[in-house]
Amino acid sequence: MAISMLDLKSEYAQIKNEIDTAVKDVLASGAFILGPNVSAFEKEFAQYTGVKHAVGVASGTDALFLSLKAIGIGQGDEVITSPLTFFATSEAISYTGAKPIFVDVDPATHNIDASKIEKAVTKKTKAIIPVHLWGLPADMDPVMRIAKQHGLSVVEDCAQAAGAQYNSKRTGSMGTTGCFSFFPTKNLGCYGDGGMITTDDDNIYERLKLLHLHGSKSRGIHEMIGYNSRLDEIQAAILRIKLRYLDKWNDLRRKNAAHYTSVFSSAGIKCPAEPKGLRHVYHQYTVEVPNRETVMKKLSEKGVPAFVYYPNPLHLQKAYDDLGYKKGDMPASERIGDAMLSIPVHPELSEDSVKMIADRLAEAVK
Image (cartoon, rainbow, N blue to C red):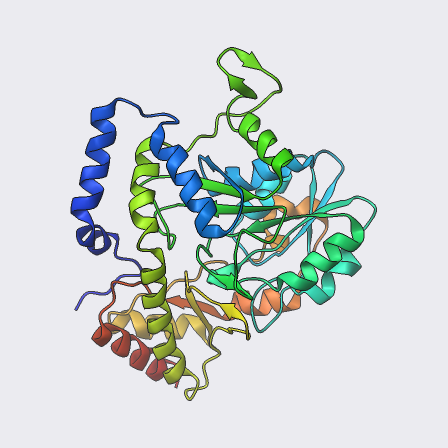
């Protein structure tokens, strides 16, 4: 049986009639930019997340960047975040002219270590971006407590965590803003690029509406220098359909992950953590293994795909040489970067495939 890291073709086949109808309706309407599906999806996603407002944008990267701009982040400011994440997280900070300040991760969760954040706060610090990596919420209570104590904004990077929960609160509902990516590979993905910003702050919402549309509320009237970052009508129509399936698909991911953990725990493989009160949605099922290259080779020979997402933490990326970080500055992130390995966990996997993947990884690490 052929196994892939992701199976978007099978996912589409399940909902083909609904998707095709939705897309054809948009094509027939002639409304392709900021049409009724965008407005409806913003309302539906805000309700799903548990916030007052949502603004559709062109990508998850734009969601982060426009959030920071709406908050007022700019030249000379500092924003604290994790070095164990996709480059877009820090890239969005750099876009504003601010400086990313990296804080090492918790070795158990792979998310930012909240106990280390306060030491990184300076007079220039204006915000914290906790990343809900792999689909597991970051430890938000201490993050929010530190932010309140120092007057900082919190921008949640929820790109991998649509539907995840922290003490019954959905990701994207706890910070100043929440930033989502709808890149096709995400748990809630469209068929192109797309993103969303969630917030309970009325003032930030009004600024976001200006920023994502050339600084304009009405045609020909521009109140500020803005950007062109809109969620397409066709993508919104697709996402409205897929949102209805998100919890079901996340439950299937969790079922697959539970089987993996039951096998790997006795095989000496470090499994993903899920602290009490948190609901992991397993955008990726990421383990830590010794001799990773050898393990990957053995898996490939057995027809099991595996992927290394972030082998080089952001503080060691050439793009950030000017920040002065060096190897050894973020020991947990660096160690995880050398050992992490993601295996298929998507909802389209059959039970036999899940069992086979689990058995073959357990064999490969012996």
